[in-house]
Length: 431
Ligand code: ASP
Image (tube, rainbow, N blue to C red; front, side, top):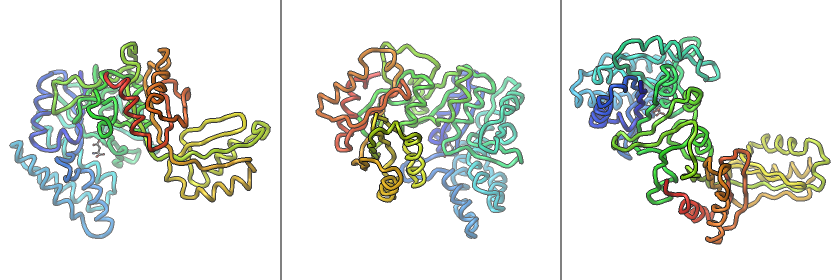
């Protein structure tokens, strides 16, 4: 069996939903369908989920859920264009639920709920409310019992449709995942039935090698591992919700990212292992806006707990380093620029408490992450990266490799960020 999850753009309007129907009908194994709430139809449009959060705020501020009118119109129009009965009663019920102050999670979850209710008759699929089967712990993890509960509900031979994005807590209240969390629901469903494939249908033909806003026409990555996609998420590439990996990974269920608008494309496969000989690298991604705090103290190793004390002082001033590099007599931490509001204060405090020889806040840095299992498996991949930078006269200011052996992080001055990305993309870009 295949679990097919359709994101907000795939269910944004009736014509998109017609495409989804075709996709489902073209393979009888596609029996478990997970849907998001309708997303944006164009750049000026609003996502249903955003409108629902707004309704909740309106109620909280005593205005009544004024924006619910837009939501109602949107679903009514979709129903009409699909030839379905209007769902005024269900819409009334949801509106009064929001009006009765059930809170943001309840309100936000209704986008998916309404999608699934609406589409169950259109796809001739049985509706399963995920609030009844997916139980979340108080700290937001999925209870093991959810998988069995869901599996027990999928015993027939027909199709099933599930709303994404939410479950319920031990008190039976609705709890949503973080934004984009319908991916997680799809992964839970895939694990519950031990699906052959978890298809994640979106509006791109898979994961791209580089950010298309920065690089012209980057190629699609045909295959990458769970570990590689996690690493890509950590440096800012996000097509797939990072928490959605866990449920499927242990069961080796491949994830296939596909394009609803181009179902003929194979998309990207996320798997356990891959052969890296042809494509050592799967992604080049980056983030601008880091700052380097550099500290030197002679015989640093003679001062037990020096590093820990530094970290405490930084944390106390809202600086949470994401990368660090330690030398014999020096240490350097990299943290997002916007955490340095109290930069001067923290420097003075560190000077006073730890008496370093030197402490400096260095100019803004941009980080580039090069991710691929080919890095540890092949000789010369990192050398190629540095040669590409050398050929463009780009100075390397920071390197981090080994914390994860499949990610090489390189810091460059922000002025050279784009050139550096391009230079590295040019050597590995075609996958
Ligand atoms: N509708 C939710 C959101 O906009 C969840 C999802 O689409 O995955 O974040």
